[in-house]
Length: 187
Image (tube, rainbow, N blue to C red; front, side):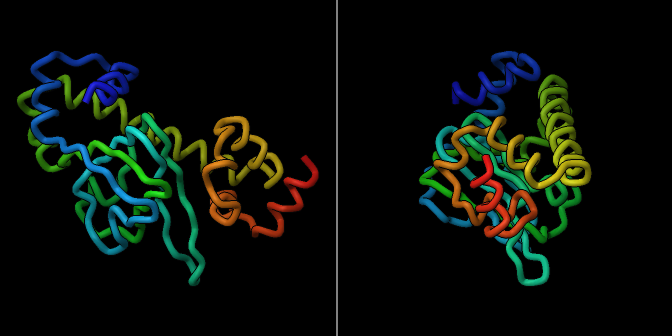
């Protein structure tokens, strides 16, 4: 659990009591490569912290599989739209490597907010940061060329090419694998 508390410190330091409360509603799990953690059509009830490995959120549009985001070590992944609305999601979470996670029971977490205001503040800051990342991703697609998006991705996540298939990277960038090959050949 130490790795998740180090991650939390980047946003807001919490007391030992709050750490203990989060530990009681968390479980460390190991998941095999290509496992669907949360399937399409189910409500998100768990927030995952990736200790080791890699995961993605994806969905289908016109029978095409679209990767919405990747999450690497020391990051959180959840389907926020479902987490907060409690509605089934049109998106899924899949691990792309053998992955070690800390699973936080979101329902129990939200119940802790009243007793531990610092936990509520911590997760508000984490979700605000995720919201900003989402807006940046949308604006990246709106205002930048595919070439620029690829360059930005490689700059931000230099080892992504070694860990993620080109098909998934192309999907994430909103281009075809053929277009990605052309871009890579130029760079």
